[in-house]
Image 1 (spheres, one colour):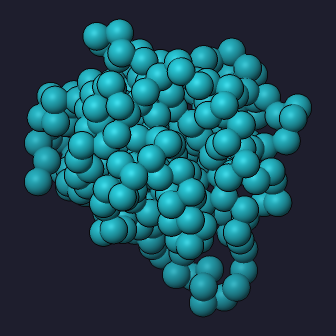
Image 2: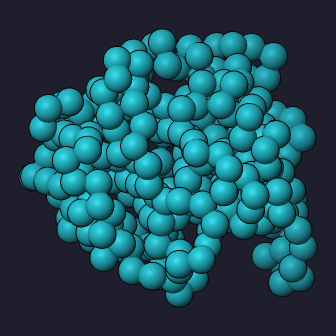
Length: 268
């Protein structure tokens, strides 16, 4: 199975880039299944039914998220109703939605997608390591191919989870920082690992945010609401993971990092 995973979608620029490019990327990489992190898809904060539908229409089979999943009030009922949308599994009992689910690719091959969130420099929620153990026990035997979006701040926590789950899942790919790392590799036990997949958003920006607003906040210390740029080139980043359908072990992991010019359907 070839899985394409695209990182944090930052508002309208990221959605527009994926609407234009995703069908071509799926074809170019011969992808069987598409996962997109949508937690910043609504103007840079959270997700709404409308922005989720844009991503599904573009080609996503499953949407993962992170700490901003709660930013839009429309997200709460959607989490309870939309089976293709995941939130981090290690939020406490009582949080709406689910953090793991079995999906199937076009050939009917099952894939378990798990969404987890880190705790270092982030909210004090439940342990992602023990949460992963519980989910793997719950879904034991239901899917050989298992993909984890680990939404976390600290690289050390991401690497540690990759090592902890090596040999038990097909891939652990990090999100949240919006900066793609170059440490993609196959761990000794057969798990593909990448600390951060990057983002889908405005290229001339500060991690997808209007650069003037971001710089001024650093200069003044005054908190202001971030906004995404209204125009300009976009970057589309993520990874393509190939896994053995029988063993679940990763065969290869390749980073995706392309630039899109608005008004076109080509990437460079």
